[in-house]
Image 1 (cartoon, one colour):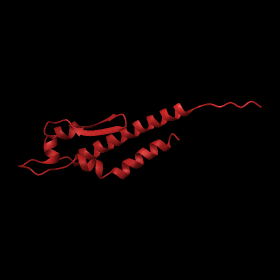
Image 2 (tube, helix red, strand yellow):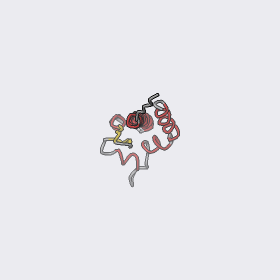
Image 3 (tube, one colour):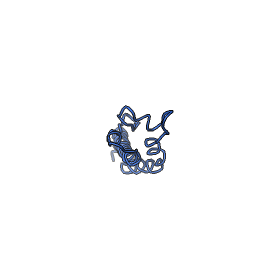
Image 4 (cartoon, one colour):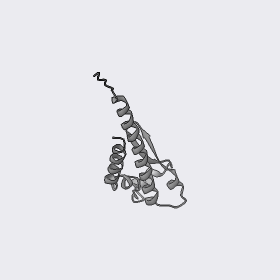
Length: 107
């Protein structure tokens, strides 16, 4: 009886890569949601400028307003009011679970 074999390793790697990118996109959006809830709001411009971007195996979250860093880190005249860092570091367990679940879905 003839036996044939098929190498599906490329398809597996591609499926996992796609799942990771999708998970990172989901994590980025969730972190944006947390940051938008935590940011101090005067006009809403800073809140509305918060966004995320996935590049390779990295997700970056940030805000586009020119004063975003001053709010996050503070100045000599104003205390810091962090909204980006807590939106990521306070939810790392949740984000890890989101990534793991997305990867499990393709295995």
